[in-house]
Amino acid sequence: MINVETKKLIVFYYPFGAGGKFISRCLTLHPKVLLQDKDLVKSKLKNYHNENMNFKIAMAHLVAIEKRNSHIEDSTLTFSGFNSKNLKENINGDKDANPLFHILTNQDDYYFIMMQNLELEKDLFINYPNKKQIILTNYEKVHKARHIKLPKENIIKTDNSIEFDMNSINNDTLFANEIEKTFTFLGLKIENYEYIEKLRIKFLKTYTIGFAVGKEFSWSKI
Image (cartoon, rainbow, N blue to C red; front, side, top):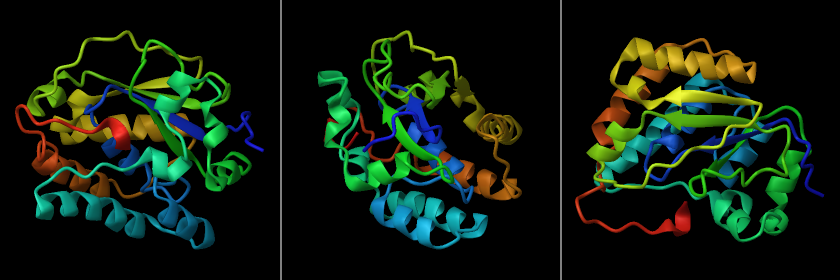
């Protein structure tokens, strides 16, 4: 059974294209935070992944975007068996969750991540009262650089939430502070912020790739 009382669920709240997947990858530098990738989750659960290994995994994604010259989107649907679309249609849409998601809700060692990219004025994960909510703010410059125009929404805040300022990606100190604040919120700490800085620099070089004017994106992988 899904344990909806889990305290290890992190939900990112942000509109499509605001950079939430990148911030989530920064958090997965910590050995106790899992990527939205079934194979890597299983590997991390079985074997200890240190910060250096996690950094290489996170960086590989950005390098792949650079080499392919196209945007690569992680699939929440593949990772968990459901996403916020399912919850929008039915608040109990997590009934389609796969066995891995069931396992993750019934363990207390690792944080795991889900995304809410739509219906931001509602809490689609309302059935999970102990979730930790990370809200992206000031993402307008990211949207502008990616040629994304979406209506402004009033993002719902839960009692256990924190905001992440996306303007900080343009400054090494400010970004490190936002990351540190987020890890503190989760009760975690990482040692090597050089990895964070390397990811930030690579993100700035790659985050507009694939986001051309007039280009259409499929929402199926969000």
